[in-house]
Image (cartoon, rainbow, N blue to C red; front, side):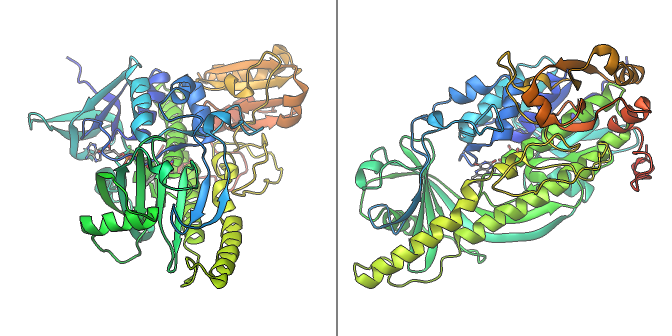
Length: 553
Ligand SMILES: Cc1cc2nc3c(=O)[nH]c(=O)nc-3n(C[C@H](O)[C@H](O)[C@H](O)COP(=O)(O)OP(=O)(O)OC[C@H]3O[C@@H](n4cnc5c(N)ncnc54)[C@H](O)[C@@H]3O)c2cc1C
């Protein structure tokens, strides 16, 4: 009997592992995901699903599930800066309830508020619904080895304690910040391993909003005489709140009495509440040197650990999963070269480093308020300080609240699998995002006459867009793709708005929705272009020559 080798083994069933399993399954690739826990969320961490992640959810058919999750869609999403909830308000950034917010003009989707205990089950159901995906909970990776053609992983059942080996072509560690997969292959993390030792407390108090005069808000940032010291977040928009004692770079533990006193201080009065969970954690600023070691990859928090300020962690990880998934599919299906797999680190590691740095910048801004002993005093001096601090802080914090550029503006500048067109890159700024079909960037969104988004044209295969072009005109590239077994669809568009955004008559979009190549005419060497974008050859004349052999292809 032939030995069974799983194409992809995914370790970790957090949001990133589940997204990877779902996307692989959506591409028809068989994979097994193992997760040491039963999947219950002890304490929800992420709750902001970014615009790009929502665009992936749109592709996967999950928008309805996210919009239908129980987080109340009319719950105001304001960020409020206060001395305490019942105390003075220093400033506020107003945001409507998620359901009332319009998507940005650059996307068919808006960001969503869907806490992890609601979002993980959506991703889990998506992954489980794919025929080629097997999810195994309460199954822990204990170790693995790899050789030239496989990875052999040892896993242990939490129920029976039995161990077994699973052979896989590729292994992806989505096993979080303390990744065993990363440690086993010896990938190092660079940066700061401990920005703060923070303590998160989920408490229940159904009538918290009625205990103060600030109204409904998503996030309250607590600023006392010592500066910014805590936050309270509406974690489910109903009765549960996440209180974070931000802490410092020095580790310290809190007693229950200290935590209760801190919560009362933050609310500004005595009141009844129930502590549901306490989670001390370390805020890090780390990114892996490499996301790959031969047949082993890492994604999500295993590859980058960042401060939650900004809500980039999971969203960056899901970007990793989407980038890696089609490349693994291509190689397993026989039309992708090893250069595709090698491009994973080249494309995603700079995005990880960028987002980690941005998240730390947000933390620094949040903690930048200096000592103001009089800030909560009912005196003219106190009022003056509150006015000054409130104005400065409100302005400063806008940087964190408006981050479309982070979510949509990442680009694969030095990617060996995109064909540069010589045009200059638009600025990469957190707060602004300029759509462009320059190779390496996210292919732009424009509404089409039939009500679809251009984004709805991309997904399982390469898409060659031809603006006012015929199939005969596009034939050289399409035939070259066929000759190499690369799945491709040609779409002709007579859409002036989209044509202006895409900037060229022909634009080749990868299965993950990034632009691979564009020009006003067919290339002189269509096979050469196809070989580059499928990771089988370097761009002719590029100084990246050698990357294929360096990857051991
Ligand atoms: C307070 C807070 C708020 C946040 N808010 C946001 C936000 O709004 N938006 C956002 O994008 N990000 C946010 N983040 C970050 C986000 O939660 C993480 O980036 C995200 O959970 C990472 O997902 P992951 O799947 O990579 O890792 P994890 O969620 O850590 O999942 C890893 C999984 O691997 C499993 N595992 C580990 N080792 C093994 C093993 N040996 N065998 C089997 N299974 C194993 C673990 O049990 C776990 O389930 C926040 C983080 C915090 C702390």
